[in-house]
Image (cartoon, rainbow, N blue to C red; front, top):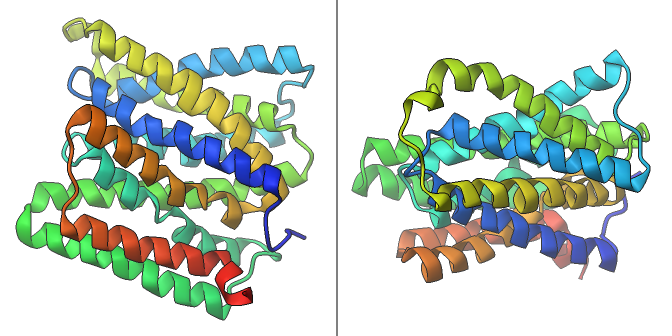
Length: 299
């Protein structure tokens, strides 16, 4: 059974994780002007696989073994890495990192629904239903405004961000089932990024053909390196630790904290700004996540 609230150590890991994942939106923004989306994500997960392999060896953990585990890792690597990472990068080609991070914060809303359908110990409650209603009202505020003001391309980009959030929901719930089976967090992280790299390799070669593109600047290479080492290798090691201890719904609360660091980096380093619509949508999504967490109801 998953505990209804998280321990202090899990909260600290969650905060650090939010900083690492919030930084990914900034690093994406540095790489997007110079490289296509699939190539950026392929570089991110491939380099991360090398780094995490070193962590597996250093920690004395075992590499994944057996067809059953690798098949599950293929699923998790697709829905927790390859698909959402690519959708977010595609979205950031049109919308700001702040907007993408706010919409990505809807992942816990999707996770509540998926966990209710696929697990026995994370069931839907009245509080969670209320949180879903308020959170998706925030999405409606942001999406409705974009449809009126910005045009179809922005709406498509925001839909990509929402699709990435839904993908995370399916990936996290399945990953928790694997964690219950006893796989070490660093082993899960390695298997996930390896399978994501395998999924993306043929797509990168056929669709992007990066060898035909101009050589990107050093800043783009550094951004991919930071994405791999900080926002993927280290971040997923922390993610699976919290996931095993606190459950799929609790770990997705990190996306409530991610927009804070993403927005700060976007405003300070990228010159981005937030409109009233984004602030209102973020407030409603945040209120929905607070309701999902359940602490406000218990108090």
